[in-house]
Image 1: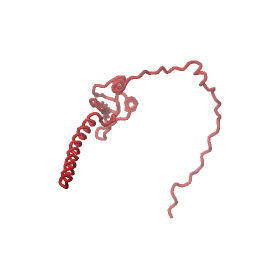
Image 2 (image 1 turned 180 degrees about the horizontal axis):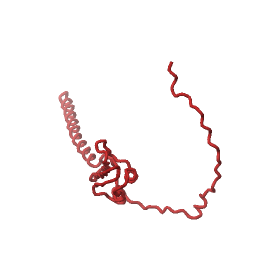
Image 3 (image 1 turned 90 degrees about the horizontal axis):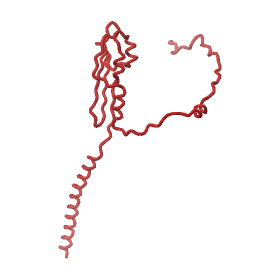
Length: 180
């Protein structure tokens, strides 16, 4: 009888071990299937200055640095060693889409724009369309107010009081204590 109990315990342990080992394979394959379905979220990475075709076309030789900066913005790269050159670099990385990289280089001579070298640039509309490529387009609501709603929200002009500005003191206290 003792042999039958030992044999029964031994067979039970063997069965439990085989069940555990087979479960490991099932769990592993299930986790692999789950990993192939579920992917981590990766954010869109936008770096640099986006320059549109319209902005590049607005540049004309002879413009001052200030005028160029008003159109293109502050350059991403302005080197001390290349004082007459500004580089505008733009990169855009999105999951599942080929990364975009564009460069616009502006050259100055005697503080005015001499020439522009640029990659093929998209229009603003083309760039915005590329941003929304993975999203579902919904119905855009019409944004209009009726005449009654405009009249209801209109406020009458209010009088502004002309108060004199406070007087400026003749002298200010020292910022640091006097040394002894």
